[in-house]
Amino acid sequence: MKGEKDYNLDVVINQREIEQRVIELGEIISQDYASSESPPVIVAVLRGSVYFVVDLTRQLSVPFHLDFMGISSYGGSSDPFGVVRITKDLEVNIYGRDVLLVENIVDTGLTLNYLLKNLYTRRPSSIRVCAFIDMKARRLIDVPIDYKGFELPDLFVVGYGLDYQECYRNLNEIASLKVKPKEKN
Ligand code: IMP
Ligand code: MG
Image 1 (tube, helix red, strand yellow):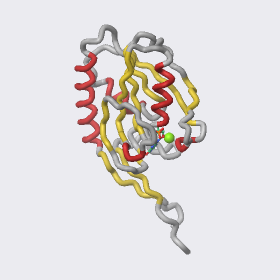
Image 2 (tube, rainbow, N blue to C red):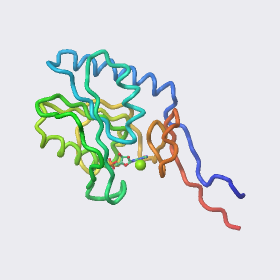
Image 3 (cartoon, protein in one colour):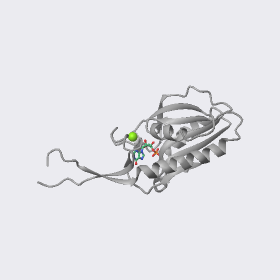
Image 4 (cartoon, rainbow, N blue to C red):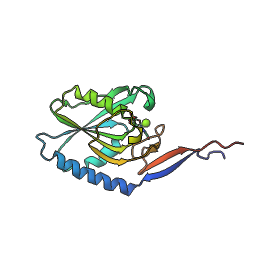
């Protein structure tokens, strides 16, 4: 039928579950950084992590600096080398600082691996990773995740910052997106 959607959205993590988990992560992270000598630098990866980092940082009871790093994959998210281009660099100097890198999803791990390597060259005092979704089953390279929201199986998901061709970032839940097979006429 004309105008009918050729894909299905199924909620896999609902809004309440997201809110609850973000509160828990905020408490754990606040405890872990409570004894830091200087405020950690929270580095959120543009653009997908914006929704998560805004909610997460509102749950923190410790001081922090917030900065952003913009990246774009050369060959799209399927680039087998995980080569990413930095489209916006940090403004804060992270030399000697504790860094908390915030990502919305770790899938193959190639993007995170690249980002960690890049950030370590700047000689921070520490880097921890907080990822909202861990899709372990799809991992191609081992990457450390210190704080994770949820583990999901091999699905393509959208919402809460995650997009499909720039759509659905603003969904308040995480939904799996399945393309419907084309009907024969
Ligand atoms: P990587 O495979 O871990 O390097 O992830 C690369 C990037 O692809 C992520 O930062 C997301 O922007 C995007 N991505 C990976 N899996 C999904 C998904 O299920 N939905 C939406 N975007 C995804
Ligand atoms: Mg994307």
